[in-house]
Every structure is written in C-alpha cells, then in structure tokens.
Image (cartoon, rainbow, N blue to C red; front, side):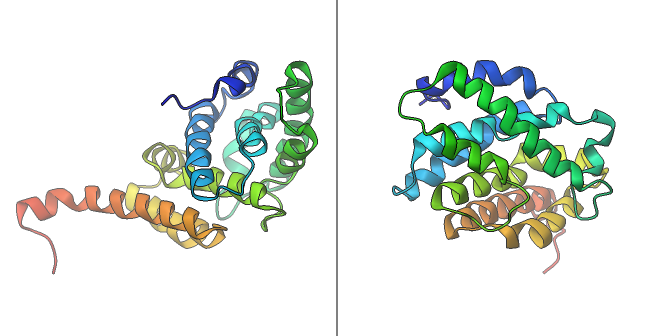
Amino acid sequence: MRTLLPRDLPLWHDARGFLDVRSNDVHTLISYGLARALCAEHPQADTSVVLPAILLHDVGWKRVDPALLSEAVGPNPKHPELVRVHEIEGVRIADGILQRHTPEGVDIAQVLDIIDTHDTVKQAKSLNDAMVKDADKCWRFTPHGVATIAGWFGDGLAETLDMLEDFVMPSMLTDTGRAMARGFIVAARAQMESDDYLKGHSDE
C-alpha cells in the first residue's frame, strides 16, 4: 500500500515546494501515514478532512525566517509567536492549493480550520482535529523525528527520548496516539540499550 492516496497526490506535488525546510517534507509523509493508521482505529474520523489537513499543515513554515526556526519550538522556545505565524501563513498557502485542485469530497473549510490551530490550540475541536494533532506529535517519537529533534537542539538520543516522554507524551489526545508514541519510545530505548544487554554488561 502506497502512503499517499491518489486523491492527495496533486496536493502533495503543490505542497512540496513549501516543505523543504526543517525536514518538513519527510515529516509530512510520515505524519500522513500515522494519520491513516490513527483513522483506521477511529473509523468515525473523516479521512477526506484529516489527510489533506495533515498533508498541508506545515506549509506555513516556509514563510518563517530559517535562522529562527529552531528557536520557535521546544520546551523553552525563544520565539513561540512564530508557531502562530506558521499557522496563519499555512492557511493562506493551503487555501490556494486546495482551491486550485478542489479535490472531490473534501470540505476545504474544515481542513483550513484544523490547520489554523493545529499547534496553538492544545485541545481538540473535533475527532478530525485530534487525528491531525496526534499524527503530527506522534512523528516526534519515530526514528526520523527523534533524529531530527536531537539535531535541532544538539542533544543525545537518551536526552531527546526523555524530553519527548516528559513534554510531548502528556499532550497526546487519544489512547491510540499515546500507545503509538509509547511504542516508539520503548523500541528506541531497547535498541539504544541492546549492545549492553548483548554484551552482558547491563544493569539489573
């Protein structure tokens, strides 16, 4: 099964030029796949809203000064206001893409409403919103997410995993999202410790 649905391929092709910052292109593809997995466990969710929203949710970072990107996020951001900037710009860009393609069955207003507050409003406005928020956050726990975030802040793997568990895990909105994130954390820690266990030098 290919990651992107045929309906969403034209959106992806238009969005790619806005996603070449902060590894947002790969982040978006992984988050899209996670959103599909979340929706499979929540059949009440509307994939015609969730998937276009997750595909376009971060296009607005293209409008933020690249030198300030690493200072906009994290436990102690210096420029948290830029998160709101990327949402506002993201709505403008996403609206243009969606209006250009008018994908069949997609409620553009709902998609834009989710993009507009996907980071700054912590509580979900709807199940569709929860799917997008959890897919976006769950990426942070994947191998690509952990490596990317560790690079942003210059932390090691163990420190990054601890930060994610302490600061991001509590913000997951669904039991499914939390289970997925915890599974990634457990797998990463087991792999990190595997040499010690295999050599017989692990602590009890």
